[in-house]
Image (cartoon, rainbow, N blue to C red):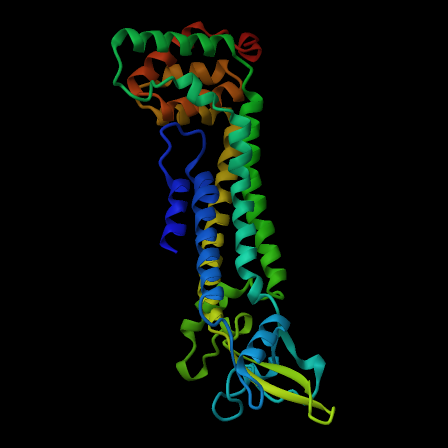
Length: 362
């Protein structure tokens, strides 16, 4: 298990050349590692040990365990509201009186590890797409200028090459910026869709999962009903039918304990809170991107905040002369270049770049 989890650390390695945002990496890298870790832990718990243990008389226990694990178990929803120890033996466990409509079957717990794996793939997809779209452009034009360990002649040659690229490729980076912002929007869509699908997967219980757990702290101890047992019951029922010695049909009512659901419930409590945090951060990120796109006067301040060594006059000049794609490229360059080199490049670039059509008409 340790070796499997250690293999995930490569997803969290620090990248010397950054082409994305911290929130973007949290969604793509950290959330992917989180979901894969949960999937591996639940898989190990499911296949190493006893994910289900049923109590039944007259039948070999391993037969009933296998049958109930494959064919699912059930609870009686109205029994969750009854007092444990007086009216019912366990939450959700009561006599079904052969009423099939009153039963709630649980079939999803054995699929949780697979669902988490596919959720991890969905979270990694925006990063995969952006890496394909970006194509190593930032690494190519930085050329090691994020490090200062090079000779003066080499540094000047690379700086001139970078400046030459920026001048020759003005107004050719709009698609570059739009693709990245589309990948950020895809992160937001992914979180929304995943939360909706998890809610469907858990029969409409997931959306209020964390809220009910937080509300539990305000309820007196004697009145508490753990909301997690509605989604992941620890004790359930299972009916096993077989033929008797004379061929008559026999019904065996078994009580099943699901230790795996202890792991499942804690996993999804954390996932619920993390997805809510990611949702808030992504909404804020998209609003921030909207300000960049639709409020041009906001751009010089951001450019100056990226590197205080670049004077505000140069930031205003560049923001006025460049379109949104070129502005985004130099904004990201500020994260990857040595600050002193970045100041030199931006100062020279502001002098040599042609003003935009909108600037010339003023």
